[in-house]
Structure formats: C-alpha cells, structure tokens
Image 1 (cartoon, rainbow, N blue to C red):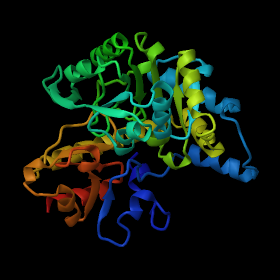
Image 2: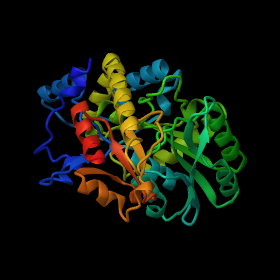
Image 3: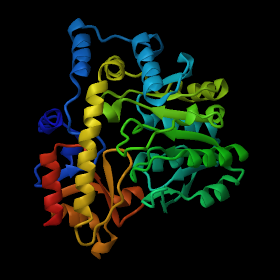
Length: 382
C-alpha cells in the first residue's frame, strides 16, 4: 500500500508553485495545499487518452455527461447525497466560486461573515468585491470523548449575523487550516442562525473527501433540508486526487433562484473548466475508490506522526485534525518574534500563520512521503 505514496516524483523543473518559493535554498516547502503524490493511474490514463486524440477544442461542461454522472455517483456513494444534474455549476476552482458568490448575493457595502483563521484567498474575497469582511473566530471546545477540538464561535456568529448588512457567510468544512469536521449539531446551529437572519451560506467543502478521524463523517451543507434552499456547496476532486493544476471544481445549488444568480454573476468573467479537468474528474470519481482509501490510510499515519512529534517539541503544540492533509501548529510558546523565520532557519517552509491572521501559528502540509515528512519534522525538532 505505502509504495504508492512513498515514491513521489521529483518536482524540480516543473514550475511547481510550492517548490518555486524556496528554489535554490535548503528549505523544504511544506506550505501550499497540494500533495506530493503521483496521481492515480486511471486519472493519468484519462488525460493521456484526451491528449492522444489530439483535439483540445471547446467542450461545454454541461455537455460532458461522463463528468456529470461521475459527480452524481460520487456524492451518492460517499456522502449519501442524491443530487439532480441541473444543480451542478462547473467552476475553474473554488476560489473563483466563492468570489462569484460574493457578487451574486451581495451589493457594494454589504458585509460578509468569514470563519477565521482561514486561507488567504478566502479572507481576501470580500474586499475584492467591495464588501466588508466580518471575522467569526474559532474557539476550542471538547468533543463527546473529551478531546479538544476547534469549532466556530457561535456566539459571535449569532451576534454578527443579526446585522441587516450581513448577507453571506463563507465557511470551510472541513475547516482549513484547523482541520475540524462540523457535527450535525453545529450545522443545525449554522442553519438556524443563517435562516433567521436571511444570510446565505457558501460552504467550501473542497477537503470533504479527506476525513482521517475514525467516527467522523462529512455532512454536505446542501444535503441538509434546513440549508438546501439557502446554500451553495463548493466541491472538487482537486485536493483529494492532486489535480488542482487542472482548474476544475463545481458548485451544487439546489435552489433555482440562487443558482441563476450565481450563474449570472459568473457570466462573461469566469471561464469554462478545462477538458482535461473534466476527464480527470470523471476518472477520479468512478475509477479511483481503492486509491482514495489507501491515501486516507497513508495520510492518517502521517497526521499521527506530525501530531506526536510537534507536541514533543518545546514551544510547539497542535490539536489532532479530523481531516485534510494540513496541520495547524501553535508556535506561541517559542517566545520568538517571527515564527515563520524560526521555521525557515531550520530548513522548513510552512504556510505563514500571519497569512491566516494568526501570526504565532504556522501550517504544515503533510501530504507527502513519509521520508520527506520525517525530514521536515527532524529539522523542526533540531
């Protein structure tokens, strides 16, 4: 099993966004949220088949029945969610999608609620669209087994959502960077608050197929009766199957009016997704179930390695993430002025916590081979 993920291809001279940042330096990149793993063979075969055909002309995503059927199949099998084809709106990434949601459901000067800490493009979306961002913080709580976990500050959400200028709440579930999976009770509370205050929900669920903790289950926002008519659910194969460079994702919008507003806001600005992205998504969601499960097992072992090592290093601590391949590390105990510089001086390049509006933290990407991860952790511990 592990051989699939132990043997990762070199990304030298591939213009990888992650690796370019520290090119020529003895710093291991552990920041951008893509993995080091080779794509599953069926995905590579699907891309090769398109390339072998030789024509890369226009393909309207709504006509690509194979990709549509694949999404429907995946959501039914993996998430017990039976969707209708017309609910699907294809987008070239979730970042364009939540920016489109800002345009679709808000007017200039309105407010957008954002769960924080969060990844930089999501934090930037309100201002890019002439809107005011209102941060809804994350707090620590205990689960039913008395394990500490991160969750939303629901008191703040309830207070801020009552402002008539607040029109939209953008949420990550599973949360990025903290890795929590929202429970049924938490989603019900979100629905209650949003519905009571006429606030629409845009739920970024791009990591929903990377649940690592046994007993945890992802609940899609749009599957819930109390959210289906008031939400946009964003998903993709990109994080799970390491095909982010193909620029393909989708929004699921059951409500026709919300869907039309979303489509109108994207018109003339957001391009079609690529033919190779559609082919890869079809293959991922129909022919890669075994690869997917093996990756989950591998990432779970990596997560546990990170958790145990980080918590053994003086000045560092973290909670065990329910999901994703990202570890949110509290470095406030180091007592240094710049925790990012501290990590880079040790030869590790995590995502800077300041970019998530938490300067005394950093985020480590553990979607890599065990050999690479051990080197990262050894450097941090040195």
